[in-house]
Image 1 (cartoon, one colour):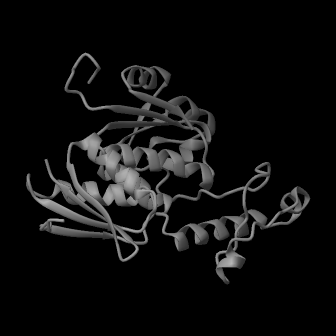
Image 2 (cartoon, rainbow over the protein chains, first blue to last red):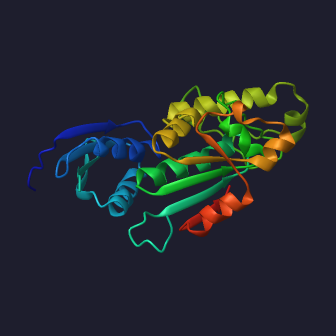
Length: 78
Length: 174
């Protein structure tokens, strides 16, 4: 798997719905178009939620994976 | 904006009609999530929901008449915390301070699990420009003045909500 280089990291470990989405949207707003956000979460609802958020906002979900028992997402700002 | 504009964002229209802690969560969770997805969101606060617009949130939970409500202890081992304590209605109705205890247990359990407080969720809604509309009629009935609410609250009536909801993609009564 290619390595994706993130421009920023957001750790939402320990947070439950809807905070990972709220924090992700806030972080993306402050980034430049084309930049990549790496978001880490422990909420088991976050994989479907981040996918839905990506579809709704048009910010591309480059990769969704599990690492050290945490969910890791790479999101590219549109 | 209306649906005649193809570039208009999706819109969510909510009615928040209940003021207890358990019912305060759904409107603020849905509103903050939708606004985070770039949607337009308006919440119409009516009847007991109006209290959710007060600067100091005092939402409490009542297990009374809420028979399926799980009572959880926010301390002890995981097995102990997962026990669902069955509370007889007679006890809930007659023990003074029972609701205060139930409220603080629920708040602590939510906090331990990583759920944001209602205050935090409302703050997120405000930051995300969610429209918070207070029902003028219920304000009159309950004797609330606009100064009793947070400054972001706007006033409106049924027609205000209906016009907003008519152009919404999702309308929910909570």
